[in-house]
Image 1 (cartoon, rainbow, N blue to C red):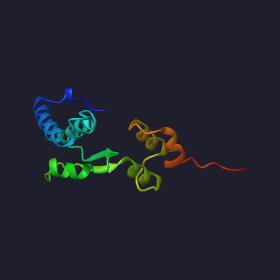
Image 2: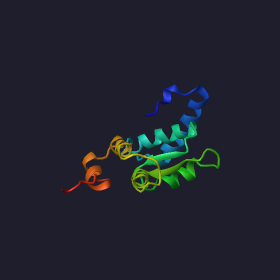
Image 3: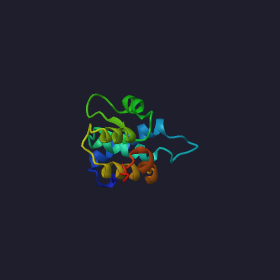
Image 4: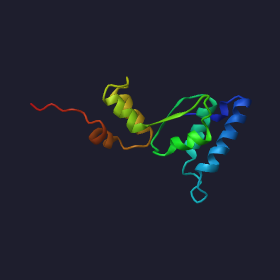
Length: 125
């Protein structure tokens, strides 16, 4: 969780400008809250130079590339399902328990994780 109220004044200025720039291209006037979380989190990531952004959005990287990435402190998207697949295949050091926590925190269904995404292996006797 991020909290923009804890930013220093100069960081807050950059955050506000970044937020507006992203909101201008990511916000639909008919559904003003739809991408608000991504806009807030991406603006914070840019200010704090967080290079990896976990998301469930497929088409977010081109927006980040055109609106935020300049060659300095660039942000790269990794889809949550791709992170979990990397962990499941041993390509990154992330336990099943932590992968499941990321899945659930992102608003996904816990039962889907257990049954479809990374099922527990059960022994038959």
